[in-house]
Image 1 (tube, rainbow, N blue to C red):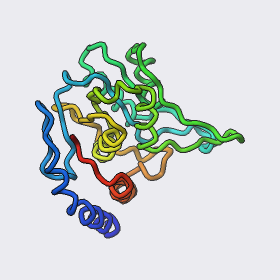
Image 2 (cartoon, rainbow, N blue to C red):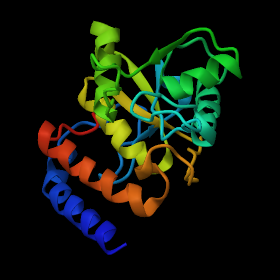
Image 3 (cartoon, helix red, strand yellow):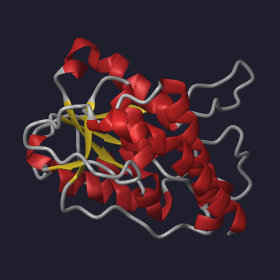
Length: 223
């Protein structure tokens, strides 16, 4: 936990000088711009023109090679799929979801207009890790010029939600978490990705990821 607190302190130190820059951005009409940059911006689900869902961990079948196996959704991604359904609220808007969530949306909920975001493979068949920013970039590429006017609803694990939303923002979307819809927050100790098995392993990764993202993009705020 000492390392987690250190990572949080480093991130806050990097974020603090950027707060004034965020304040200079006009708040979008009808949206809530958080006062603290560790808060996630939210908007009413009815305002979304699409939903982007980010997976969190997986379940690797016994005997499978994790370097070559995408893995089964597991309980966290099943809960994220449920959050997508609630955020969509029966409206006919497109959903872009990482494969672990897309599988649940099609198999359990019969959703037919889901675009699955899948990892690529190396020539030897091993999986190329798909980062949070990489997912957002893929969706932005698929949306093309439409991303400039899109309002993206972001669905992600509770402790991943800020970074998922900001990653979506820096690729050109107006991106917000769905107001009034709780995101899954219970970790899966059996996850096939070791860093997603508990907060003591995940939070240092996420805080450092936030700091790196802010530094790499020069911070453009949530407007």
